[in-house]
Image (cartoon, rainbow, N blue to C red; front, side, top):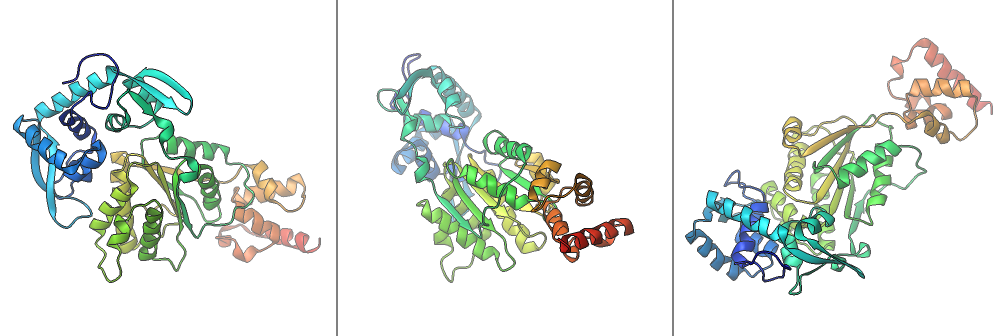
Length: 405
């Protein structure tokens, strides 16, 4: 057993105590037919950092002490049922006491050439969303937790398919701040960004994507008309393969029937514990196949600690929307028109203030509509039938002015 006070080291706590902490910090078992990988022997082995045979021995001991229950469950991504472990009431009480003991101990938190002695509680605060289990795996025999030994920015994986070319980006400071807060601070793992065609969803998210690349493993997929669910999964598996993870790639072998239940588990395991962000640009609305695939990926994301996914759609159609909002998994954001100053920067020529005011009023700040009006391409504007005769006359006037210059 651990002694009170003093410096934490790798062997301060026993394997059994570390496993109890891990089970306390893992997603709960809500349904034996949908068990988290973290509750299996392999999941425990990966998280705690011990061999699988040590896990097996420890579970026998913990069950004998009445701290753990063993059930047979089906884990996402696997066909056969496996042993899954949950804490009993006494196990829960025991794990809470151990976590409290760990929190009071001290470690030397090292980052580069800087070191500082902190309590584990303060060190976890400094390390962001790191779990106690992860810190116990990182600490060495001298009580040093070296966070500079993690993945460097240049080692992060970036993968894209259909990535648009960057265009000049104007305004949207408020929207960028919201996206940044969601990525780093908000609990919701998934963000649904909706806006009319031409409102600048892709431009905004593309700008954010390039900001995030130095900080996270980043994946971008643009859903063009010719893309399918299979091509999306293939791209996602290539992203994971570049990260050195092949669960999804193995499942998508040629000739093998795709089981979305197993796909969700493979995605969960491939995402692992790293910081990831997935962007699904212009995800298609409607259709049973599209909805089922999206739910499959969303459920995997919901079970992973530090992965975020951003979905853009012209018309919001996230399946099971109310359920995901209630669970705190989903956040929503509506993209409105650009401010006047930013819209004015889109124009390729100087026009009078009164002329621009009319353009801005008619387009409501939709960047695409602003450009189309300036170009005089009335036939490409959306819902021109809804304009009044006075507004259509103004549009025609704008076209004549454009052609005469």
